[in-house]
Amino acid sequence: MRSLVRGAVRYALAAFAATVFAGCFASGGGMPNPFAEQATPQQQAVDTDPMLQAAGFDALPATTPQQIAQLKSLPALQMGNYIDANGVAHYWMADPDSCNCLFHGDEAAYQRYENIKLQNQMAERDRQAIAAQQYQQQQMMMGPGLGFGGPGFGMMPGYGYGSGFSTFGGFGGPGIGFAF
Image (cartoon, rainbow, N blue to C red; front, top):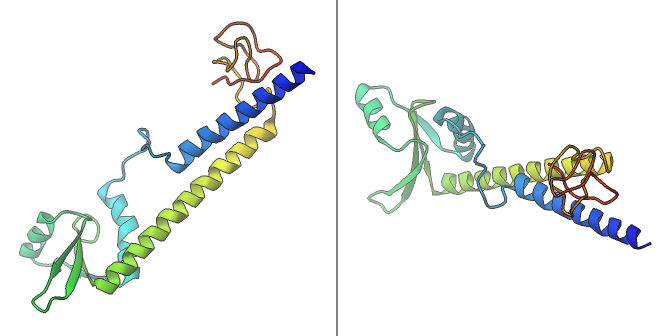
């Protein structure tokens, strides 16, 4: 009986740790992923330009050499603003790499853009959470011996999760630990 309780506690700890790991990696966990590829300006523009247009920003193409030079001197894909002589706020974003244009909009367009951007971020977090949940479910369905497997470390001396052996000593035994 005692062995059964110990096994259940170990399984609960393993499931908890898997949930924590999956949640941290899938949701960003507050730490940027050092292995994630950084988006190029062209990739950023592919994401940003449609949001600006959907929000009501006008794309003003740079057609003369002076306009092109001025466009390239602006910070790419960073929102800027100015207040005109009448006290009205105007917002702009330069895209010299993709459309070779300057997006221009008013306060209402800017607010719509911010809302669209927030909705996209929330949708991406939801997609990541669903992927992490599906991964966790797949791991749990595989059961002991099929999930993590292979040599690695165990949470308890002499115990491994799956086949193989624990680096803390002994071969995988009746308990459940992690082996990565």
